[in-house]
Length: 381
Image (cartoon, rainbow, N blue to C red):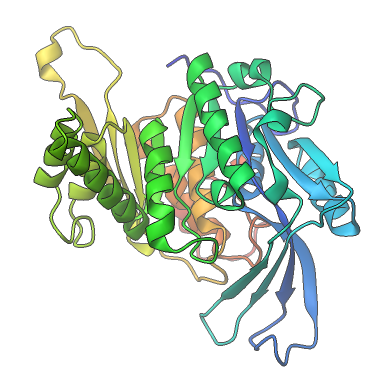
């Protein structure tokens, strides 16, 4: 991998990362209360892909976000907030469909409820032809080829049939031009039942170069890949070998008991780099080695790393997974090793948990190392 220096967050430049997905208006109740009784709410924006884009941009990575919003005040707010964060915005403003809406509340201490109103939203009308267009609002092949990473989540392909086909076409185009594909499973049960979502999420994971997910999300993907490969093996397809290799390294409770069998099983299914987000317990990753040594026999084919979680006073955990991925990918773009990527991802995820909002507390470069410093003084002077 060619390593380029990270730019100053205020500097421009062609996007090194491009991402596609829905960003919604966000109404957030103040304090601990049910929406049935809450009197006031704050307004903002939120979406997995834009959370990641903001996180990367604050860490100095030029990034482009591609989507659709409605021709309404909420859509205007989405575009304004992202542009204010120096994210390159490439979005169609849809005169017929509204911007999606998300409601977030805290019905009790330590609990967060998120409800989505996105059926028929502008972003649900994403389609392959428009996404490939060169009108300044899409992601044409030249922009895709110029980026180092395309980041996708499992949310966008479940928004609608056209959005699913747009994402699958985008994956094919990225592979054709040699752009690395990063995929965060990000299962949303409100969009599709697990048994419906699993085959599609597994298909996207199998096409990706880097796959992120929580333990349960990665287990869902691993089970779907194993079932597909076993079915292929029963019919004489060579992919059955992958099923047997994956099953050999994965027990029924793989990954849940603190072992690395889950990331190994997914790697056995052909995914080069697998990252397991474990929340307060930290993170682990398995990646194919790319460096060479004078004696090739001295290096294993894969590298495994694990880092413990960080202790913080949690205010809001929504957006922590996106912040983790932003930290990890920024470190990867800097050429840092696997352990350092996980450590930065952990820190970015932990920091955002200490503030309300999906992205507002995302780390800037000057924030990195703050938790490790362990200062007891909460006032920054």
